[in-house]
Image (cartoon, rainbow, N blue to C red; front, side):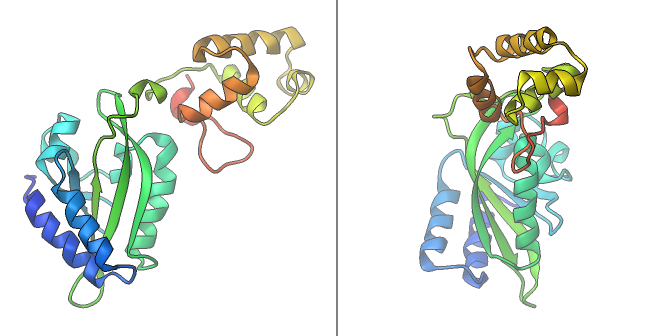
Length: 232
């Protein structure tokens, strides 16, 4: 599938869509036009199920893949796992007309497992019949964010290390963890030491903070849960 819609054509669509969105203001329209015209801006058209339909040249360049390899995917599959649920919920609100646009921070995950931070704008495009026809998304790499701050999608932990990390993040004591995991206190401390070494930190509070900053935990859940992608 070719990337049929150019960035300039998408710009016109974005400007038109904000004018029919219930949340739109003149500032929204100006901001959308300005953002689309910025160098390095990635733009994509999605259907109402948030599947990628068309993309611009910059998005192809960022991912190093042909447009036909990217089109047809769910947009959320391009994001770090810790952001997928939250952004998916935002797309649902656009598709059902609950809101006209959103702006959310994201971490984009390239096919080679490198990442970049950005702010994603999603805008619902309303057709002549007043129904939501598509969603336009815009984002560009934030070169001020270091890729090393986010974990790549790889198996970092053994199943036992995952359970220990979740327990530490939930504030469970060594004695309680030992009882729950059928380990000795020394066994728990051994796994904690391995976790500290893997994440290159010196204590438990830093371990939990680093894990959250790397996107290892699923957002918005309690008790904390490590995303499956990071467990062997």
